[in-house]
Length: 104
Image (cartoon, rainbow, N blue to C red; front, side, top):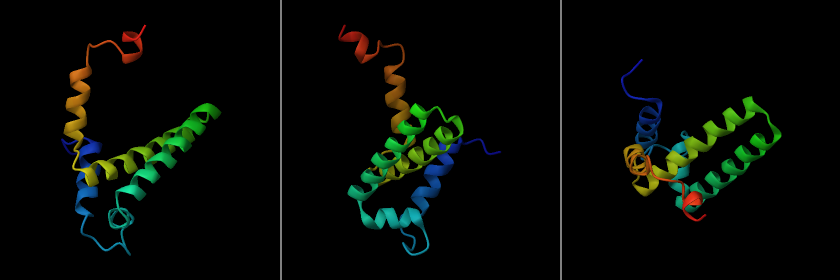
């Protein structure tokens, strides 16, 4: 197994598909369709993830979560956001109270 994590590997594959043929690559097709379509897919996958969580179907929740993360990473790539950018944002939040706790 590589030293890079699955998110870095997936992101690299997504980036490599940016200029690929939209007829042969689903990821290239999303880039071709544009950010609005990519964002729509993220929303659809988020809803499907929530539905499976509420239903309590763990296996489907795992699968839908993977779909959501893939589409989110396509959106990140389209917007010029990297996994490291998101890691840095999460690191800045470490040890800080949740926003919901701050409003109480």
